[in-house]
Length: 399
Image (cartoon, rainbow, N blue to C red; front, side):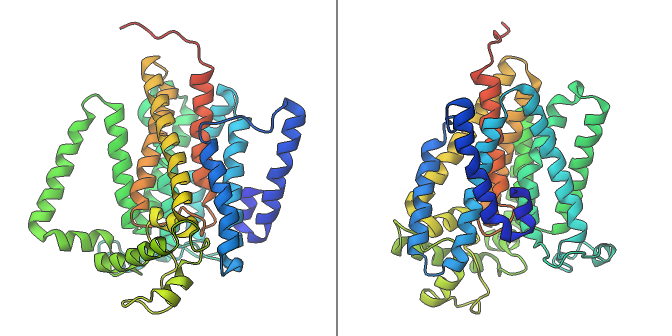
């Protein structure tokens, strides 16, 4: 139902109702409504702020669909955690994530409104090979944000567990990585490219003992670019996009978000109403009314939507996921379990990409159809922790 709601928005309420039905059924079958997780208190506070955002929103027509999307994400998280209770199901989920990123990348060929002419070194002739076959097209930045979140999972599998895979798995994982990298290049999303670079660097550091040496050429290139172009020009190149006029444009947008958080610190303004509230109370100097729909920063956007309490709750869940991902990686290394280490490294790198991308965009939050995918990755992290650490009794191998 959640997958169907990505395509047909009218199914969002049905997806929430469907998920809710399973809670009493689980109580009858297992004696509990859900498995307790380390992120529960953060989720509870988020749900409280959902009630607040519905109360304060001046635009419920915009807010209600985003609330439904947040609720489907939370339902997705708990569904994964409760269903995935053994290594076989966990491997199935990891393979499913790999297939999902592959299918999402392939779907881009018929659904994305490609950014022709955004970067001179990518020829517009490439995009003429694609034909849009859907009425509701996908923005390339939205697609790139979802792909860069999922890609580290199969990439970590190739880095860590190549020798443990059969040829069918190697082909599936390699195809997913190559197709996704190609589509990410075509999106011309600089924020996604920076996030991918950070995730790749994270994987290299986690995989090889001397991987941190790769930081040196990155630092040297960054210093050379700053020396050659200057900090203002580097920021302009890094933060400009088709709709945003570089660093100054983003600073103006971010300043409006900060004003909103200052004026509505405890309640937020209501999910999804950034553009309308900004135009009415904090008008832009560089953009016409209706041009800017969100804060172009994930953390500011959540603070604007749900207030500081909602941002704290969300950050608490993010930190729990990062901590559990690190435990999975460390556990896999200590017990020489390459699948566990690969999953932990992939999840850690996914969160690195998520945070880096979130500094320049907010397309993984409630305003886009694919926002529940973040909760799926978080559910995978908690499920992996339960399977490999809470139930693993293997004695570490002595060095």
